[in-house]
Image (tube, rainbow, N blue to C red; front, side):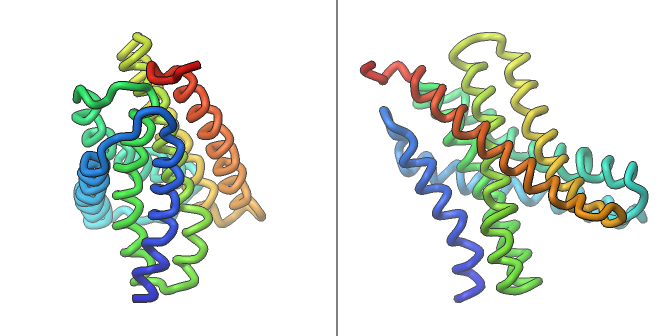
Length: 222
């Protein structure tokens, strides 16, 4: 129970925080739950791709150039694309009626993904890993989702659909890839600090994105 709790707690905390930030027209809880559940299922194709990658003889180690390919393409592009496939269907629904909705649904899907991923890590590697991920990997997933959601919100409500959608996917992939790449490199002292810098940048962007989309809500009485 303790391991499950440490895996679930940061996810629940972030879900509550993002739900609270929906200031003007909160989404139905059952739709948020379905988005979260979709995120849980989005882990399956990423696990399959990862298993195929390893079975083909490739490893999670090598030159820095190889690690860049692994971080940005094998991990970040795969995971963020799988999340987007679930979010894409949601964005077409009529209940997505203000820009912030794109952020919260992206976050719900991403937190579903992060929850299952966190369970796997915590039950394999223990309580201390769960504590570390509560302040690093889980918030990082939320920032990747916010980046994607910000641009998907722009695509739905402000035009330039293709370019904004592309920017959302690319932005999430780039930030995700940078975060992982800095963690994967072992031969450069203190390079892992780059992951924390990218996380801070992501958090800062997320706060600005949330403010902008709330200000642009059609339900904003201001």
